[in-house]
Every structure is written in structure tokens, then in C-alpha cells.
Length: 211
Image (cartoon, rainbow, N blue to C red; front, side):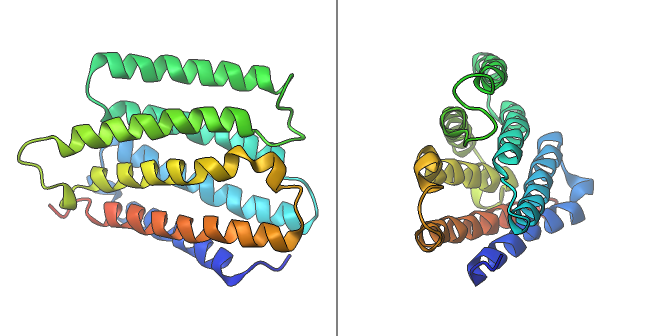
């Protein structure tokens, strides 16, 4: 399957923050290391999805499993970043609710044969709100130069990614039914947006150990 050039640029851009992060792993905190695993999961899924698409095999089941694993991990990561026992408890209970809802959905309104636009939209809202709270808490720290703070850049990238892609993925069921030309036009916006987010993540990991 031939994709537009921007799609391949998007994939290459996803390797940048991961590569920079691996090179800085000796100076990382636990959440930064977990975030590397999250990015590695995304890279692997991109490769497998491309192979499946070339074989004309649906990757919807793969994306559903990826969303469960990757976004559960993100909730754990943000739990490290937010301050306050109440917020941490809300995230832990939210993670349990998400996993249970995801499992129930596979046998009812979101089987593996279709997109997971409802559970994805729900967890995206949770991650967007939680990352925004963590971002405000980080910015409010006294004597903190946020522009040289790796955590600030990673949280900012997360917030932008989930708020920016929420509209697209919430109508994924309608999107996958359009013709290929229209699909590429819509997805091109997503690819460019991804590239910008990956640049932000790269900036974050570049700053690890440099302060």
C-alpha cells in the first residue's frame, strides 16, 4: 500500500523522541522510562498495522488492544506527575473503570470487528484533563524554569495530542467508510499533527540530564 510522503515522515518522527530518550535513559525518573515504553508500543503497532494493511487484513482489533495497553500505561504515568492524594486516587479508580468498561464493550457495543470510538473518546477525555491538571501544577511550581523542564514538554505533548485527535477518533466509525482519497485527505491532518507532537516529545527527552 502506497502512502503519502507525510505518513512516512510521521513514522520517522516517532523514532526521534524514542531514540533520544534511550540515549538519556541513565538520567531518567521512573515515569520518563515508562513513557519510553509507551512510545515503543506505538512504534511497534505502526509497523504491524502497516504490514496488516498491505495484506488487506483489518487492524481494528490491534488498535483496540493497543489503546487498552498504551492508555492504561499513560494513566499510570500521569499518576506519577500529578500532585495530591485525591487526584492520584481518582486516576487509579479511573483506570479500573476504563479496563472494566473496555472488557464489557468487547462483548456488547464495541466488538473487535469495529472501531473503539466510545471507549477511546472516554479515556482520551480523562487523559486530556489529567494532563492539563498536571501541566498547571508543573507551571505553578516556584523557581521552576519550565522551558528547560523535560516533564513540562512531555505533558504538553500529551495534552495537545489527545485534545487534537479527540474529534477525529470520536467519528472513526464514519471515517473508515469513506473512499480512500477522502481518507488520505483527512488523515494527512493527523500525520502533520503527529509530527509536531513528536518534535515536542523529542525536545523533552533532549533536556533530560542537561540541567
